[in-house]
Amino acid sequence: MFSRTENLQTFTRSYPVVSLFILIQVALFVIEQLNAFFNFGFSPLNYGAAINLFIGNGEWWRVVTATFLHYDFWHIAFNTFALIIFAPALERMIGHAKFASFYLLVGTLANVLTYFTKINEPFYGQAGASGAILGLLGFYVYLGRFKRTVISADDARLVYIFSAITAIFTLLGSNVSVFGHLYGFVLGFLAGFIFGKGTVPFTRPFNTGRRPASGGRIIHTSGSGQLGRIIFYVIVAFAMFGLLARFI
Image (cartoon, rainbow, N blue to C red; front, side, top):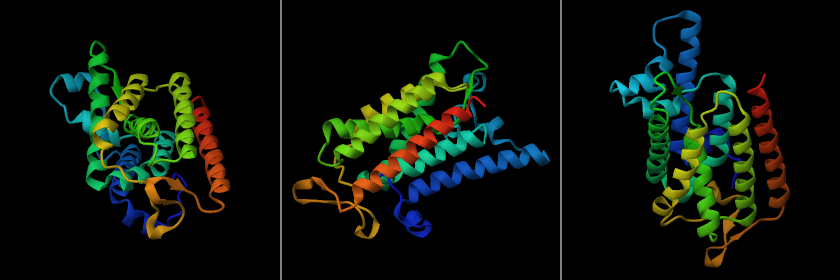
């Protein structure tokens, strides 16, 4: 479910919304870096980051655009990696339109709630997909608790562990929006009660990997357990490396 075995063509065709969101945030990051080098006068962060002073002056589009903007390489690398790992399965399980609505709604509301929490700090600013990504984890926690026929125990356990690692990253990392992460996770969990209706078990493109058994329960093909453990350790290693990189 969280191991990516698709090639680029299969990935973009099977998960078009995830692919579009990744393309947008990478493109905006590249533009930001080019502007830093060549100073051609357009900085996505200047015009789109969720800065309280500007939001208070009526620039409410920032609570939407901030989800697709990132401050540095490790910021976007960690969030893009998490998006590639966790978002595709959910897009396939709830459908393209519902996934797009869920992701944008959770990311936006997390920024709105953070703004009102920090409203007395006019120069407080935030950017990044972390709130929406924490929303993905919150949604999976909802599935693991209330929709156990659509997610395996191993996948649910992986979500719980990664959520714990992310919590440590949130509390110990520098320049991290603690409230943005917290609101994203809680909103994702609560949104599960709305967007989780009609969720189907994840099936891989071309029916490879895991498949649903009769009665909606999940079964695994031979060898999937070992692959799952490998992917788990890769995710943990990357998460810890991303955590350490924030202190360097």
